[in-house]
Length: 273
Image 1 (cartoon, rainbow, N blue to C red):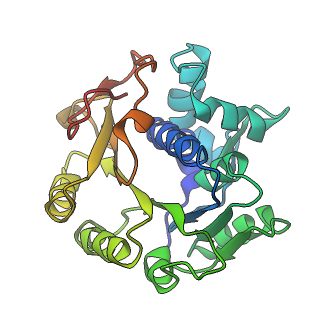
Image 2: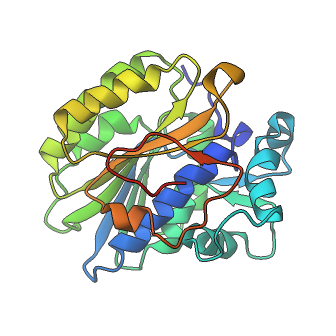
């Protein structure tokens, strides 16, 4: 199924939550002078216009990034805000997908591997990165393509970050992702990783996170919740599980908690959005 297109959800609360954590992770990892690899399994098109009919139709950007910026609910020192401004330039209605955030934060010596299966989204992503020699864009499902390229060959960086951000269109993804993560970590123990998941009233994410935790005792979790499950028709929150990244790096104590969000359950991590 290829019906999902992220342009309807770009700039939503879930998007901002994910991108804040991604920017924190990249800030932490680029403090090391050695080159790194950034890999993403479900990249989308990498660039979105918040005035597009699709974004206007759902109103998710208006309730998300637009509200957070207007009401100054985000700490001005967040790395995400720096990457956002660099990406937008003079056009404040542009919003970066995670590949563009990574591209703005990574250094010239770093590499990007980006997978996107949807043909239209892949075409836009490929054009966006056509002049970037450090970036490879693949028209395939990253959960199939990425393990085949791990561990990175001798000429590529030995360390890196993997972002797993599926659409969850298919219920089966909740069941297959724990084994996929186990396989990734077996093939590339040096790699850090992040998995984003939607928090929906059906609570399918709970069994998935529990299954991942059973196999990885170093797993950390970060959730942002803006509604009670029974009160939401769609997302009531956004979650990320991650490994290979320090709790301190992902949740700096200087971060100001936005009043729009409140913290959900966290595994050994008292500081959260």
